[in-house]
Structures are given as structure tokens and as C-alpha cells.
Image 1 (cartoon, rainbow, N blue to C red):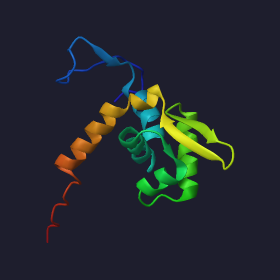
Image 2 (cartoon, helix red, strand yellow; image 1 turned 30 degrees about the horizontal axis):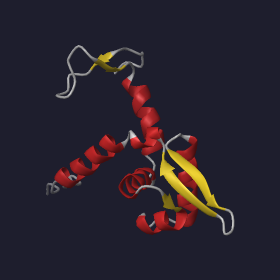
Image 3 (cartoon, one colour; image 1 turned 135 degrees about the vertical axis):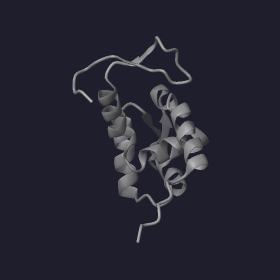
Image 4 (cartoon, rainbow, N blue to C red; image 1 turned 90 degrees about the vertical axis):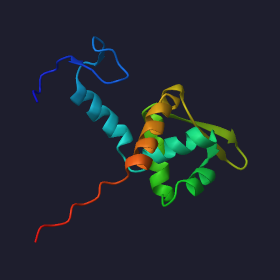
Length: 131
């Protein structure tokens, strides 16, 4: 593959062959992976899609295995990337609620496709080693 930025026609089943889906696949993949390729990010987005706005504790209980520190860092990053909105619901006691922005909600078909693909194909089975 060339490192030059060239238009790549997408000939997938859901796109017309003359339609350009993106101009530089490497650039798009890098940007998406930087945000969604982190361990907890898709899990957080999935829960917010499924449950709607959630407080920190509720979100932590739904995202199995995430520490408070990692959840906090992940939410901050998702907020910086414009996918999650943080709203202070009450001052005494301080209660914060997280929800998806329009940009975050636009990930619904992507998250749905990843979940469907994973359920259908699952992890690749290792081939037996030759003796």
C-alpha cells in the first residue's frame, strides 16, 4: 500500500461503486482506532446506547472489570473526543450524569455491527500445530 493520500472507491454491498466512502483509509482507520480501539471505550458507548444517560457508579457497575480510575480516564477521553457529554445533575451531593452526544449516538450502527459480527464469528479458532 502506498502512503500517498488517494481516493479509494468503496465497492461493498452497501455502497454504490462510484461513491467515495473516504479519501484516505489509513488516516480514517488511525483516527477511529485512536478513539474506539481503547479497551473500555466501545463498552462505555455500548452501555450509554443501551441504557441512556447514566451516573458514574451505574456505569461502573455495568462495565464489568473497569476500575474507577480507568472509567474516569476513558470518560474524560470520550468527552474530549466529542462522543460523551458530562452534566452535573446536583451539587449536594455532587452527582454527574454521562450521555452520548449526537456524534456518539452516530456510532450506534458501528457498535451494533461489531456486536453482531462478534456474536456470529467470535474469536478465530487456532489451527492445530503440525507435529
